[in-house]
Length: 527
Image 1 (cartoon, rainbow, N blue to C red):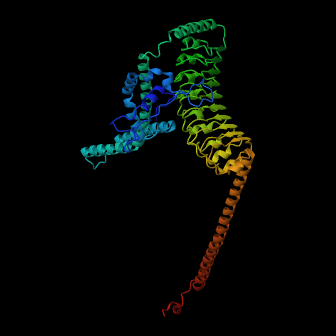
Image 2 (image 1 turned 120 degrees about the vertical axis):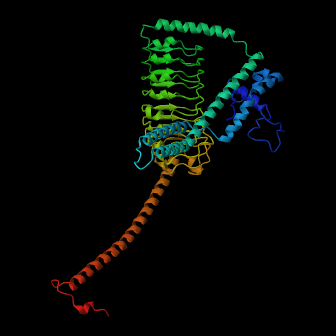
Image 3 (image 1 turned 90 degrees about the horizontal axis):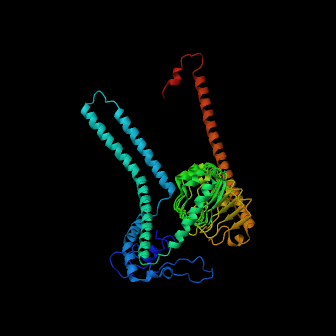
């Protein structure tokens, strides 16, 4: 919930320099509000060019020296006062609901609204009883309508609260973005960022060159275009007119937007948009019905458009290294042909349950996310061969029992998580040859088994599973024996009752026989 030094470097730095926001208190006082007090240590921005053996990454102030100026820091502090207050409120309300919960809440609200309309319609069409006065009937209808609406509002409340919380988190994200932009402008006024004129001229020349290539390509049946690493800042609309294009590589540029005209590439099968500056994809991408490979890794995507589910020919989808916090709810239901899915290095906390419908999926990479678990039906991915769930750290603590149904799994990486025990069904993974369980507090299987490798773990868990089945069978046999004994007693009791009934009938028949002759009065005599 705090601004990330990676995505909001200036905002994170400025807030870390403020002891507190609100009433002034010493930073070390015991009654300081933990929701308001901010970090005192300034964040650092990693230098990609620095060697891996570097002991201390440089501070952001080393890269942007104007931040050390008191007047610049003071202006920036005034610009971010609302951020901490909003953060404090959200900490009280709780984390953002996942995308599937939000979609479910919207669906439930629509269902409630539809049911409400139907109930009100039935109420209006209901006929007045003959013995009820017209005015009394109207009053009754009004009272009934109010009651129906109150019940509907009560049912809506929980789903509305989910949507409101999601909207607040969404607004907070925009607030962080706007605050970062304000800080950048303040820094620019300080004279730090003013040397881009020559680069812009070069980029304009490159763009003119690209337009020339596109104009020359029309009418020639061009199928492949590779414009990777051209420092493009925008994509000309003319791209949508190359209807015969099969492959388009725009990786390694500076694109911030993809035009809607891309929908005109009806025959496109492979699209590479990796390593750009994209914050969103156009909804029109769903019109690329023949698209088989889509790579949008290494961008700034906060979400994927739901229309991406319409690209039903997709075989490979790579959305790794973005800012995604969820995947579209219906992704698995629509992309039934997908074989390879990569979304590592994002902020995804849960997978949509529909992902279990991807029966063709063979490769799934979800490492470096914030996964709290897997869907219960994950075992339906019976063709899955490679699965990477590593480095979800403190969030991933267990695997569902259906995990053992991934019978074609060959490679599994569960390192750097908080898994204490593998599921009992783990021994069913007969094809598993590569297994990484490092940096987990595993108790089952024991560490000495884990050290021996994948085969030892699989054999150990298989034997454990067999023991569990044997014990379960023993219990079932005991229950069967108990039921058999209980059944014998029940059958014996029932037989005795039937026998007694038959004897009684025979005695009665004997006493009342003889052609219906009168009973002997002596027998009826009371003693």
